[in-house]
Each structure stands twice: as structure tokens, then as C-alpha cells.
Length: 475
Image 1: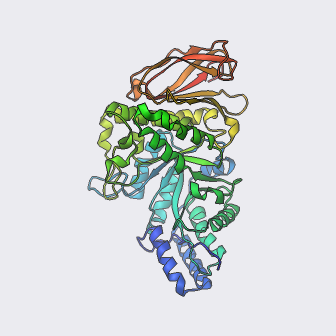
Image 2: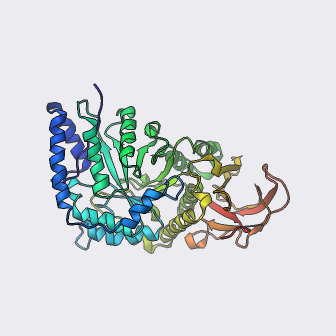
Image 3: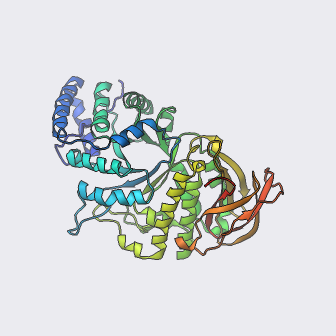
């Protein structure tokens, strides 16, 4: 029997989450036939359209831009949040959609994110209030992605009905993308691929996200990307090792870069729901307090320099230090601490640089935008590579030093002479670092190195990532 998808139309009828709805439908399917579901969907769809009839969308500029842009060539930086656990009102209750938009949109936009991913949206939320939330995001320059669980019931539910259910969310609520979550790891990957192909055919400008183990199912030519959770686990494991033994684990970073173009990847850096502080990125960093923050800053810099789109979970942007709790909110008082505030400034500057420098985003998913400089210096735990944009744009040199020692006179090959200037240094005091670096720029020498005709002699700060730009290019 063929596997099909069962997706719930987002009508405001109950407080159940989408996952609850999918599970309920899966059980109900055993005693129903496809035609009954199709008839029910048509009736519900008409009712839902009626409840949105009073809303006049004001996001036409965003929607036109969305249809024109190829997300693989543009910066894509996503902020993931649970709206019930992000921030509460003075009475201790989660913010409603209007209040959430008034807080979230300026916050995420000021940090330079291009999209927000909203988790655990209840079907009761999908009315005019949620439509206005989406509209506020669009007017503020943010796309909206919704977590969308999928089920693969063994029942004769016709594919057009399933597609129509997903189509409603995208078209009637102006949602920009869906994160597709199979209901179980054993779900049919081939069915996922067929569903994605059909949905992209109906809504060509939709963004679709899957986990990396489902990457083979994603239509390569479409606006489909895979969350590279393997990269995330490998990088976190590397940074949790004491610096003196990292040389034995250097391959984790090298392999991540070597496989960066096997799919259209998004690099996720997420603190998940947890009551255990060690479950966070900051909690798992090696070393004392200063080193843990420095490790995380270096890891963030490495992530933004690395090929692939970006995704940050709520709280990670300021090193929350403990997993978020569904009944609570993020500890915003941490931003009174210079280390946490510095992390937030770093994320904002990384996003700004990511958007302004074509070398960091244009070839995120193509090998033409990447070239090795140093990948084998496990003794010093140094990684260095070049990122390239389209013709006529400046290349960037990325260097990460994952030891707690200053490395002076470190020579690296570069493709051009002239002065190379730091455009980002995660060790800056502005972010909470020790301010070691190459502040006035470094002039390239006509001394070949690492296969390049010129080279730089640099000072590499401890536990830090540098990004340098050749100064002859227009800013």
C-alpha cells in the first residue's frame, strides 16, 4: 500500500498543536476513506477563508521580492523560537501574536536575521492574529518559517488532498517556508521527496527544510535545504575537547568543510529545550569561564565563515547558558553581563557581514565559493580557507585558532598583494575578548605560500576566528 501524507488544515478549531493533530489524524485514518477527508477539507477551507476575509494584506513588496530572489544565492540567516517560551508579559504569560510581533520583529531584524522559524504553532493560532504577525514580520524585513510535522499513515488518502492542506498554510497565511518533520525516523523518504516536488510545483517560491538524513529526498534544483545536524554535532564535540587534545580531533572540522557541498545545507547552532545547563553550547565548551565564552565566539565566527546558510536557536545568540523551558522564558537579565551582551553584538556583526559580503553567501551551496589555505595544521588547531563571491567582488580569508595561545608570525598564502584588513575578530574587546589581532591591517608579501603567489604574516588571537578582506576592493 502506498504511503501518503496527512496534514491538518490550519482552521481555528482547537488548541492542539500540529503534531497532536497529525497523530490524531493518523489514528482516525484507520476507519475512514480518502473521499471523506477531501470533503471535510473543502468545507473547513471555506470556513477558514471566511475568517481571514476581513484581513487586507500589506506585504505586497515582500511577496514580490520573495518571488524574484533565489535563496541559494542570497543570505539566509534564521532565528528559531518557541513563541510560548521566548518572552512573557508582566503577568508571566506568553506573549500573544500582536505583542510578540512588537518585540520579536525589531529584535530579530536588528540582529540581522533574515527569517524567523516559529515552532509549536497551534491550529487555533492560525487566524487573523497570526496573519497579522506574519505581515508584521514581512513589513519588518523578516520571512516566516513554520515547523510542519508530517505523518506517513498506511491509508488510501489521496495526495491532492494532502497537498491542498499544506498549500493553505502557505498561500492563505503568506508563510514563506515549512520545516518538514517526519512523524518518525522510519518514515518513507521517497514519499517525502514526492511530496516536496509536488508542493514546489504548486508554490514555486516556498522554502522547504528537512533534516540531513532526509537530504537525498530534497529536490536539488528547488528551494529546498537540509539542516546539517552532523556538522553541528561534530563542531560541538570538537569544541568540548580540551585544547591540548584537539589536534587528535582536527578531522572533525576538516570533514565538515570537505562535505559542505553535498547538499544545500543550513548550519544549525541551537540550544534545545532542557533543564540541564550542560545541554547548551556554552555549557559544553571546554575550559574556564573566559575560555568557554571565547570558544563559543570562535565557533560562531567559524560557522558564519563556513559555507552554508545559518540557523540559530533562541537564547544561543547571547549564550543563554541553560536549555530553555517550555513553561518559562529566556533569562533576559543575562544581557546585563558584558560577556553575554558581547555575544549578542557578535551575532549582529556576523549577520551584518554575512549580508554585506557576497563572498560569505553567494556560493554558500556551491564549491566555486571555497578554497583551502590550511587544513592540516592539527598541531596548532588552525583552520584557514578563502571564500569567494561572484566576479568583481572581494574574497575573504577566514582563519580560526582553536588553541588558547597567541600564534605570532603565522604565515598564510593569499591570492593577491596589497593590504589585508580585519573585518571581524571574535577576540575583540567589543565582544568580550582580549583584543589581540591585526588592527591596522597586514601587507601581503611577494612570498609564495600554500600554493598562492603571496602571503601574510599574521598574529592569531587565542580561541578566535578572524575574517580579512583585501583592501583594494571597494567597500
